Length: 301
Ligand SMILES: [Fe+2]
Ligand SMILES: [Fe+2]
Image 1 (cartoon, protein in one colour):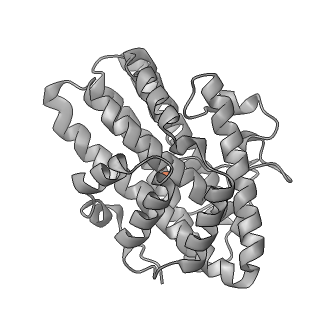
Image 2 (cartoon, helix red, strand yellow; image 1 turned 90 degrees about the horizontal axis):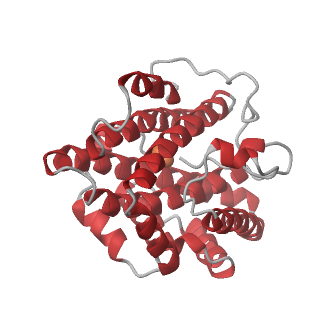
């Protein structure tokens, strides 16, 4: 049974060492390292051997561009610009809020009680993350937005909590029972988010006023802990569903979804974008905001 311990406990298990480990890993090995760290941190997921085997083969066939030196260098180059960095935090907040609404709809329609509770926890985490990115903006770039705009920004988060009753968000294409395809996409998205988190963690240090470094680090630790938990629980669900679906089918689907993610990442890099926004997705008929039918559906938060 997967661990659904509250995020406060999970946050206590993450520290600088984990972040340093992820940051120091050689490129082309970070995706696997993050999956391993996520599985180990939970401690109750077993070895997720079927999931790990499928992941290893999928990234060998479809190497992710977000796990390369070029990607990391380009990010750090962009991140030296405070305006770019601040905008990227706002995009993160928007994306987390959007991802939260998708997960909430998916959770509302999940027939399996365990899956439902985990999806709900995930939706609540992302809803909080949306506000946490705004708190990071306040700490790293104090007074960078007007008070009235800052108040408006709070609406990026749907404000979900575990005490609220689930409901499918009106008109959401995610108001449907989750499938292994959904969990594969979520798993890739969460790994990519973790890579972004580590890059952002390093880059924000040079912008943040000294007095705000400690509170900033506390929020970042909590974010990293949560993102790894999201990688871990989706890995566990994939492992469970692998047994029925069969290795080859899961591998093919994993490869296809990595291909989709890699395509988006490469396109985004052309525009110097590292986390697509809703407006960005709206330009592509196959991107996450247009989720329906056979189109790719992403839960990038
Ligand atoms: Fe996440
Ligand atoms: Fe998140």
